[in-house]
Amino acid sequence: MDHFPTNWGRPRNDAFDAYGTYPISQRPYNGPTTDAFSDGIQHTQQPIVTGTSVLAIKYKDGIMMAADNLASYGSLARFKDIQRLHPVGNNTVIGAGGDMSDFQYIQALLDQLMIEEFTEQDGHSLGPSEIHEYLSHVMYSRRSKMDPLWNSLIVGGFKDEKRFLSYVDLLGTTYSASTLATGYGSYIAQPLLRKAVEGNEDVLTEDEAVKILEQSMKVLFYRDARSLNKYQIAKITADGVSVSESRSVETHWSFAEGIRGYGAQTQ
Amino acid sequence: MFRNTYDSDNTVFSPQGRLHQVEYALEAVKQGSAAVGLRSKTHSILLALKRSTGELASYQQKMFRIDDHVGIAIAGLTSDARVLSNFMRQQAMSSKMAFNRPIPVNRLVSAIADKAQVNTQEYGRRPYGVGFLVIGQDQSGPHLYEFSPSGNSYEYYAMSIGARSQSAKTYLEKHYESFADCSLEDLIQHGLHALRETLQQDKDLNVNNTSIGIVGAPSTHEKTTGVSFRILEGETIQPFLDTMVPKDAPAPAAAPAASTDEDVQMAE
Image (cartoon, rainbow over all chains, first blue to last red; front, side, top):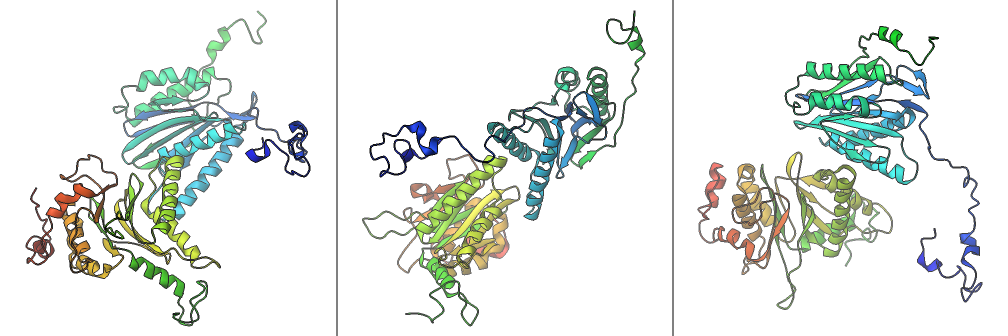
């Protein structure tokens, strides 16, 4: 598209076409672009190495989040030690599902942003709500270039005695609630989280919050074929950010023997 | 005509290590009518003296709102001020857009100071001929900054710029220790007393030639309920002018504020 209105009706040179009769489509600046890369650019059309659900809830002291350590390559459990909960500054954690290379890009982007903020050295810092606002603009501008960052992200934080929990995805869509889940977790875990948390945000203790997330991660591990029984929990409170070591839950698979109708059994 | 041969190009140092064009720019600030700024623990305020070119002309605008939480008072070339205040508004909006955060006041002041500094160093430019007092409120509380064409910016408890601002400064230096705990009404009274010092012999502050800019909770004399920056002009400042103690009187109200650090209770 030529954005200069003066070019719309006439060629650049009046000596060449004084009456503007030269067909618009044949004018040189409207011809095919023959730039070396013009047919060589391809935008992201699908995620490649992916992470699955992220869960997050509000509780008495702040925000608690959980995500497993798996990055899948299609249905192959390719990387089993990937951390999907990333602290940004001292008050915020972002958790990501979707394309892990895009997530690494977002991590680098936010780390750079926090360094720039830090070097101001004026006592001001970016909190969770500012980071979420910024991220939502990044995500929306990329989708508007038809080249989205293929993630669904949860931003959790605690600053100035306030909890913050909000979602943003590859389309730039945002929303907040006292429980959030991405990916498969939004179908499987979200109802469980709502039942346990809604109305109890100011009552739930840290131990209770951990139990709720553990239970949901266990259900997800049973149900979600792209999940792993190895996950981390992040909490963000007035004391700052902490991301736990990897942990797992006890599971029992003996019931699987009784399932008939698909799989390797012969009868 | 010329101070010496080193003043026609602002990028050339004089043998004394001075940039004469920059110093002339600081003189341009002193030609403008005075502005005074004060800060307490809860408020920052600006007061400015407006000039008009004659009976038939309107008074020149001295204060500009930059954002909900920031405002400026100017002394010097109004046209340069409009360029800079436009830039400040853009910076403020960009912070609101990108982070949904009111821009920290010190960053706004640093941004224009950096712009001004470039003009003192690059060939073919001239320094801005305007100085600002910037007030604002952010997460670290109320602030008052001075910006000058030399590219310097400082934070102050109280400051004055413009014509005869030294007299106002003398008043402020005498009383500034009481400002921190002042009520808004007392702070404005101090500001008016300081601004009055910059007047010529036979002139007085009135509703036409005085502007008051405030950030912080409203005074009982105001109609607004918000805490954002607002400019009071015209009849709305009459109640504040009424609190002033006549100069020839022995200033009973202002004196105790200075000597005992106690707030002065104003009549309604």
